[in-house]
Structures are given as structure tokens and as C-alpha cells.
Length: 101
Image 1 (cartoon, rainbow, N blue to C red):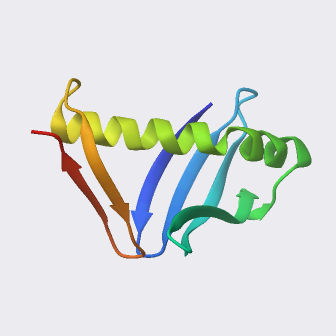
Image 2: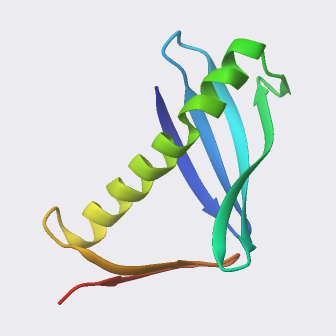
């Protein structure tokens, strides 16, 4: 499984390929719920149509891993492999990351 991630205001759009080779699109909204960031799946499609059940189940099972891996790649690209993050704030419009000194 892998995902290409596009961060847009209020959403994270992913192009996901599952282990069986199915390629689909997943739209995830970023919601602040009493100080906790919630990633909510808004839609899952394959080729613009409703996704097969197996694809939906795979996305539901692997979504957090895909998102964490995507954030990890982004952070390593920006700060380097051995830099630790002090804080990360996710809003509807931006992701603000503060690295430890």
C-alpha cells in the first residue's frame, strides 16, 4: 500500500494503491474536536465511482498508517532524519511544525 498526499485547505486528498493494485482516491477532512484533531473520511472512490468493499475496508484499516507515514516523509524532507518535532499544529488552512533545538 502507498499513498500520494495532497494537502489542501480543510482536507487531505490521497491517491491510494492497495496491495492488490487497486488505485483510488480518498478525501479526508481535518476537524478540531475539543482540542483533538480528528481525521474523518469524507469519500472513497475508484475511478470516480463508488469503491469496492475490499478497497474501502483496506483504506479504513490502513488510513492512520498512511497518514502517519506521509507526515513522517514530509518532516524528514523538511528537517532531516534525526530532527525531533517539538510540536505540530494542524488547522484547516495550515500545518505548523516546530522542531526541537
